[in-house]
Image 1: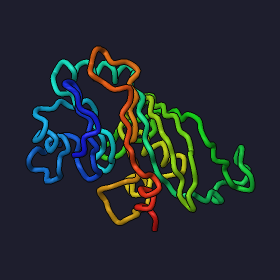
Image 2: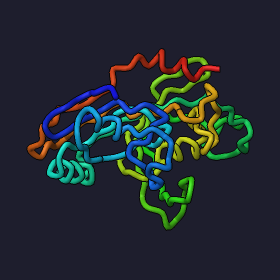
Image 3: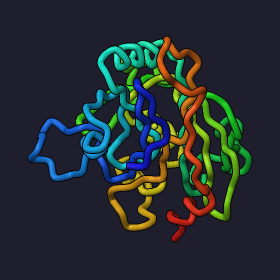
Length: 230
């Protein structure tokens, strides 16, 4: 595991796609690799602060002692950590939409370059879905650039619902590449990776923990985009 930051309180690693964050309920019967267990081999006992989906890569944070874990959970729950994700989708053709739909031009729905998505999400066995009885979900989004037929998104979830970003992009017509669970195409043919990366964390409160101002991946994003080209 590539270490992004380490102190007496915190370890931040770069989780590859195709790895669980922590062991599943199946324990040793689950053959999938576990990022937390691999990191523990080099860094000792670790305490999870948050999780990333099996198919998602990027920054994964662990506490190195129970006190730090408790304080990190407080910071997380109080929305004092700003999380940024990068996602890749395909340009979509909306000519199947009714021509007279509000805001449309000749059947095409204009794409907002930035804004906020709000919804109520409920959790099913495999997928999350929109329901009146669901919990509030808030996501800031920005369409940063288009590369040929690909769209490059910056996403900042303000809540922590399961599959929040995956569902929001899908329901707005832009499923993440590789995310077949929510309608995305596979590029490349790899069912253990989707084009969603936890790329940056900024800490607005440190609670006497040894934390940096932010942790960020130093990836070549153009090179990353090429992985998902047909």
